[in-house]
Length: 144
Length: 203
Length: 200
Image (cartoon, rainbow over all chains, first blue to last red; front, side, top):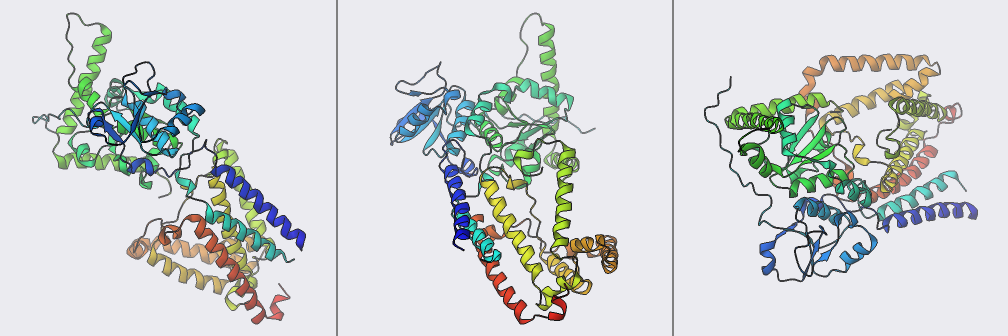
């Protein structure tokens, strides 16, 4: 009787330990993906002067540093242990910058899914997703 | 001790542990962060607008262009052969059949480079293979494919091929997008139907 | 192997092979649990034998708890698990027909095959009836199409409908199942028919 209960409790305990190991493993994505779709994420360089809160700029392109006093973390070393600690120690907003906005966008999704808070993409343009051209239809087109 | 009581106890215990699990694990990234970072750092994930123009000209069926912009922007103008999956609708299960497959290469684009790369990172993180980004987005498409002109004295064969490719894609793009809205709708509907038949599956 | 992520890279024939052996195992388990006896199955309706309820509910909660755990550890992709779409009207009508067939024939389709494979003649007739029903359904489908498609709710899940996490729902279902098993055992004592139960 007693031994049976011990066996069951033992099995459950093993399960609890496994679950806890998984839950507190920092090297895994655990966040719901939809968080990456709904969050406001872009701040443009022009808006920087209006920003009231503290912020730190993180430059992902180590060779072309643009802002003085920025933290430089090359994109491919983003998840190194000391770089992650650096990112976690930033208080206020974290603004990711790279000359090519593609890099900061990818870094943003990765950091968002690793549950870093108050991370933004710093863009050169006010709206990086604006279509700068207007389609000129050809009105002579006829469907043959 | 009765076997039924033992099993009941075990199951109730497992259930209790499950009840405390914080979230629905099915909807988080499948790749490990370092794996995702590795594939993100690799420039194999990009197609240039010239390459996409070639896909359009060849009517390449191993390529699926995915337009991440809003439905109205998509109707205004889109690259021929693309389907519209607005970025904030990306995780809608009805697109799963298009996004998570191993038959065709999906090329994502929006106006700039931000949205497409975010979408790429999301689908890649979810473990969907065959995902690519059209570098520079629609802005680059307009700049290079639609508006660039050859200026110079002598044209090399390489430049000649490049511009021929661009001019041809430009013509297709203008033709399809100049259609009146109703015809454009019909064209897109027909395309969707054709693809759903190709896709098959459970439903 | 379907949604189990670690088995994704196996060749197709091996996947099908695994499916084949799981199928044989399922049939064997059904037979061993006594599900090839129509009297045992009908016992569910009269209350003298509730094995059906216990076996299927145990299977359901074990599968539910197991899939949640596997998915938590990243071994199972629950997105790939097919969720049956819910047609309210068709479910109600189909449920009544299925229940009536179950009590009259003494089998459900799976147990019918299991019984036929050990040579039961009634199961053979039951399966012929089932197949004719399927044939009739397919032939008359255009006429009943509106009924079959009525009140379509899509692939809904009870936990989403209740607004609780899948884990909490699993726990609630396990608790409900255990309570139900207890009630079922009480019913078995109350409606016991020794003439039948000793035979099966």
